[in-house]
Image (cartoon, rainbow, N blue to C red; front, side):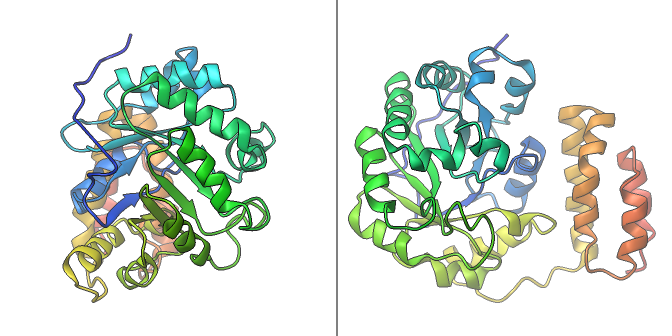
Length: 326
């Protein structure tokens, strides 16, 4: 059964600039992680993990649970979806809107082999007609805005602008572009020049993504863009979002000086969020890799990781972190 949530009125055109967003990441940006990020930096816009339109179309309970969000903490909340069947996008979009999300984002950039082999994600860059049809089908089915996250292209940025112009004509009201091609995956340096040129050619908001690891990086890469999107750099270091917000919105470009002791309450809160939403067993199981990343670089990290990857309760995490000489 769907639990309907009252929507707020969200518009990409009216969103405060620069837009600072947390990239949708499979297995990472669940409700507990998004709520942690919003506690650290309330100004950040958050996205769901990417969700299958096929699963949403058929009411898969696991996928519907992945769309759970807290309307008091997480707005504006964007649900990212993926697939290749226009009719499934229509049905999935209606479900997302009914659940109270503020916007829908279509994944056209994931380079994972299992995704691309199914003609999803980055594969859509090779089929611009289908990509545009998916946008049009989604936009026509709902009243909330539809955006797209993509990459520079399949093996070059040559077709980025015509591809994105086709998406905009079909109804995309914002674009987020990762500064690498599909062929690059996550190798090499992200190239923002094609994204800057895209922004010079289109009227909708354009957000840049890739290689933003600090407030200084965000300032350097923003250029003429409407915002930035940060993904992998937050894993193990969600506090970087506060640094980026301070740099872009308040002109504070000094790197964060938070001590590990100051981070512990946030880590414990992350565990509590996970347990509240998924139960103790599953919540703590999924927290283990986060915990291992949180202690990276501190004295005795290897020994701490060995303990943290076996924790079964928030109390156990509190005991382990409380034993660290700070």
